Amino acid sequence: MNILEKLGTQTSRSQRLEEAAAVSHAAPKPKSRGFRIEFGPSRKDILNFTNQLAVMLRAGISLQDALESIGAQIQKQKFRRIVLDLKQQIEAGKSFSQALSAHPEVFSNLYINMVAAAEISGSMSSMLQRLAEYLDQEAETRSQVISAMIYPIIIGVMAVTCVTFLLTFVLPRFLVVFEGKEHLLPAPTKLIMALSTGVRSYWFIVFPAIGMLLVGFWYFTRKTPIGKRWWDRTKLRIPLLRTLCRSLYITRSMHTMGVLTNAGVPILDTISITAQITGNTLYESMWKGVFEEVRQGKKIASSLAQFTLMPSNVVQMIQSGEESGTLGDVLNDISQFYARELRTVIKTVTSMIEPLMIVVMGLLVGFIAMSIILPIFKMSSVVTSG
Image (cartoon, rainbow, N blue to C red; front, side):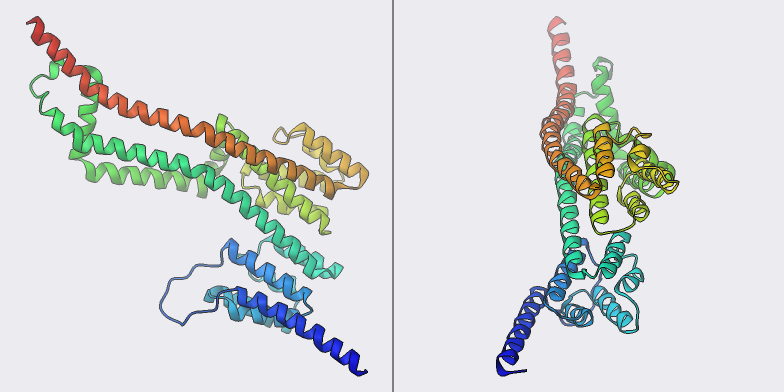
């Protein structure tokens, strides 16, 4: 090797190290040890890890060195131990996908299968970059849905707080005026008086009971199969929520299938993973049914046509993709279309929920106000006629 070649090699090596160092320093350095409560890695942690690993592999750094460098910069101790364990398993002779599968609570089946496909094709850095883009889009979709629900939740909390304040602090001052005249009070006022008295007298039972009901509803709809299926079916029947959830589930399913198909993951594994990430038990059952049909030799489109959860135009596009051999591209086009529709639906639903919640809050406060004003008018008319 002559001098020029040596200089070129040293220059390229220094460039790769500088790029890797820039990625490593982008992550926060670990702080001094001390007592602290730590949770597992978040979605953002996994996204940052994937991005850093893709850049470092593209810079020519070996997988073991990249994992060691990233692990040294991770602030969360639990996630750092996981990353360093990946390095140790690879050094012990396991593949990267096998090492990832040892931590299913952190790395999903989609993540593991895409890495396994990259190991076969030899395109690890590009596959990790594709994974990072997928995770980024999923995080963006999740953020959009959460932001759409924040305003109704705030308005709902304000409505409950306002009604509670009126029942416990404002109404008792007016109830003194109505003492001894209960026979003159209209039914709405009697109802409000009973609610106010009940809340003030049994607040130590009322508020814990409401809390237990909310926790029980959450447990029933999230932890029990019957409750999850009931709630998933209900979400697809509520007018405003139905379109939002439908667009979300279709976007998530098509995007996942498109990414896995283009990554070279076998079609049965692709459908199985898609069933796991839909987020709705009805759609999960649909994809499991498609899995059984495809395993018997049928096409995806003909299997989906048996279910009403997937729009007919989506089934037709999938069919054209299967016939033309461009299924991955068609799935990406469908996911992009429904991603745009999801953004539009979120804006529409939010714009409709805002005035609806304001009207509901106004009706509640107005009902309480009228319950106080009506008996005053009634008493004054009785006094005047007398």
